[in-house]
Amino acid sequence: MKPLNHIELKNIRKQYGEITALDSVNLALKSGKTTVLIGPSGCGKSTILRLIIGLLIPSSGEVFVKGEKVSPGTALKLRRRMGYVIQDGGLFPHLTAAQNVMLMARHLKKAPSEMEQKLEELCELTHFPKSGLNRYPVELSGGQRQRVSLMRALFLDPDVLLLDEPLGALDPMVRASLQNELKQIFQRLQKTVIIVTHDMAEAAFLGDRIVLLKDGKVIQQGSISDLRQQPEDPFVTEFINAQRSLIQL
Ligand code: ADP
Ligand code: MG
Image 1: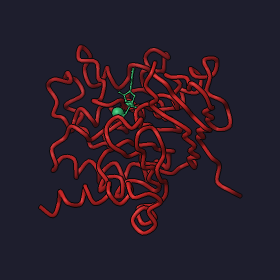
Image 2 (image 1 turned 90 degrees about the vertical axis):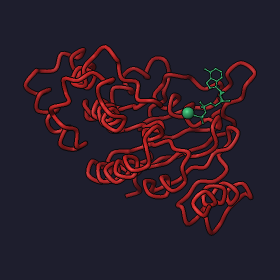
Image 3 (image 1 turned 60 degrees about the vertical axis):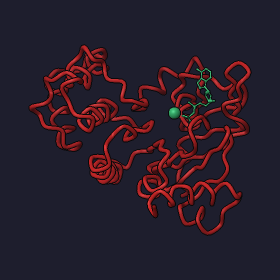
Image 4 (image 1 turned 90 degrees about the horizontal axis):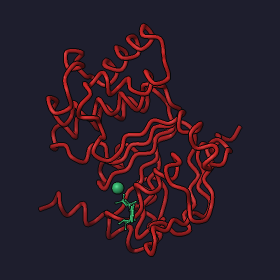
């Protein structure tokens, strides 16, 4: 059987007033795979995530999640099946790590014993020390805050995980170890993951599929070797080389 397309964007255009953030975007994302959205700042990566989770409605075109169209009527229900880590983490500063992680579950009145067990499981999965659960975000390191954001996104066991530059603000050592951990977590959980980055090495390491965007358009999608060996536009090579030259300095 052909693997299911979990998420589809069909001919999406998104305007913010005069600004065209996305134009003619078509994507079909398979269940259980990790897709990386990459491209220069302002190319529309975060807008794609917001459209998938139904926080934005396209100016034209359609978004489908498991065949169901994302619309104001369905967005709330569909969103329950998605975990979302926004750019910069988005933890509430006045809540402890544990309170942040369990916010939605509390709202949904999950049983306390069930929540405790889930919390313990996620601490193990994300290597977050249980001793940090009663700390406020400001009392945690950058890497720990990202682990808390990830635990919060995973708490209700979503089918889809949307991560917007989750490692962007971290120093290189912490970033490298979290990249390793994320990859293991994705492999273990087999969820449909969409992760945004502007780092090609990170994209190549984490993604089954890479979608390169520029100025609101998809320039190419495929594996890292497709992008390297069969660039469909000069920008693909330019983008890869621009990042490589940083390492060769
Ligand atoms: P990326 O995440 O790739 O940096 P975004 O999706 O955030 O890009 O933004 C795409 C484009 O849309 C940019 O030109 C950005 O300035 C613009 N944009 C994003 N959000 C808004 C908004 N709420 N109002 C107006 N313009 C926006
Ligand atoms: Mg962004």
